[in-house]
Amino acid sequence: MNQVIDDCQSGHITIDYQPGHPHGFVSSIYMGEVNLGLPLHDPNGVFAALKAKTTPYPAKLRQATINKFAWEISFSLVVTQKAVARGDVVCAAGCCFRSVACINQVLFALNEVYLLNEKGAMALANGFTLCPADYQQRIESVFALLAVWLQWHTVPPWRLSYATLKDDYPRCGDQLPGGHGQRVDDPGTGRELQSHPDVCVPELPDQLG
Image (cartoon, helix red, strand yellow):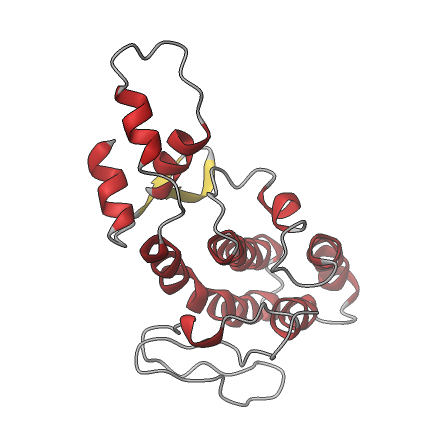
């Protein structure tokens, strides 16, 4: 545990496949559990010493989380378009989920709050200072419309989700990276998203909401 906390403080995080964590188990979860945990018995102060290392929220962990997940927000929506074209609702929903999970990771990092689990993360993020307007309601509407579109072929849900996740994306200044040096286009306009030698992310507005 001590080593994981040290790694997080130095900006090194990992994410691994884990049943019960549909997006994956991020190593910083351990640090968050220590931060929020209450010891039942700690006569030698072992847990207290670990807990002290979790406050304040590490700046390097904040940036590492943004670096790791921000680029995939738009990339997953690009992949969603391919699933929608095939009428594959399960794959499309999975891609949309990954995009939202990555947004949650970034929002928690921006607000310097430890994310412990995907369950309930969007509801918590919805109350953050740095968060898109009506975040939870708009994301949930995308998933509700996904199956409807595949049945009736009206408004493509990936288009709705792209607008929802892009237009009100929180202002992050120069902290946001982008992804893997590859060109990523807006599926609706064909225009290239903002590029970076290492990462690609949507162009960000100056203010929230």
